[in-house]
Amino acid sequence: MNAFGSLVAGFTNPIEALASFDAQVILDAGCSPARVRDWTKTSAARNG
Image (cartoon, rainbow, N blue to C red; front, side, top):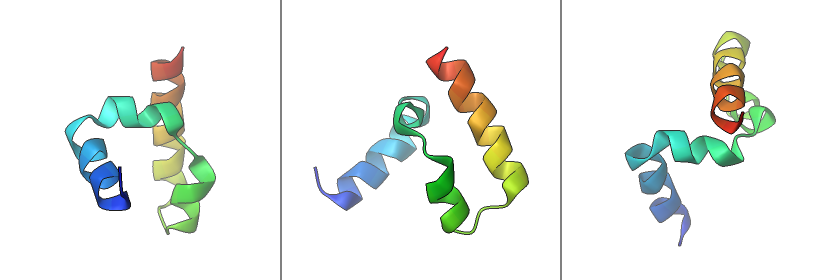
């Protein structure tokens, strides 16, 4: 799968995309630390 395919797959199955969540990647992309904390909690709940 190419990068665009991965992007689209993340949109269509966002919970599954959290399996490979990386907080540093979204921080580096410019997301706010508060949003990163929220995503971190969601990822932790998903991954148990």
